Length: 183
Image (cartoon, rainbow, N blue to C red; front, side, top):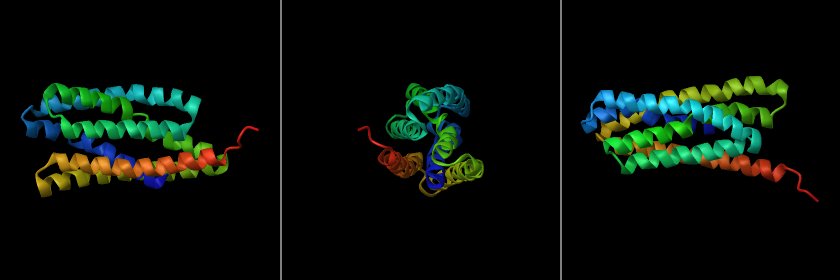
């Protein structure tokens, strides 16, 4: 979970940290980028609530996998579309998917671990997400500085999201394999 949390937040931080500068570089101005970021973060509220509802039905691991797939999809869309209207739409989509991801790590810890261990482990896993956000913001900026390409920085986010998908997919597979099968 530490690796998954770190990787997902490296991916998540790319648009959250660099969207305003990206819009400035595209010539739309930083005010448009700030509007897109506000839209993204506002819609993240609905994602948090919706992910909780979904997790109550299908579990934290499956909900996290869905969120990670959708976050990756939105990141890929940033690679192919850079028009003003499309960036607003993609930023809204990204917000609807990314907001519920980090809380799922706490839900998963609680699903996998006994209560006496869950608290400390949740703190450890959530700390990894914070480090992922910091590293992701930095590495995306470094990639841009090295290559003068936000496209490569977005691609970096897609790759880190792939790492998250592999880990979360493994955890879900392991959990479903360990569940007793009906007779």
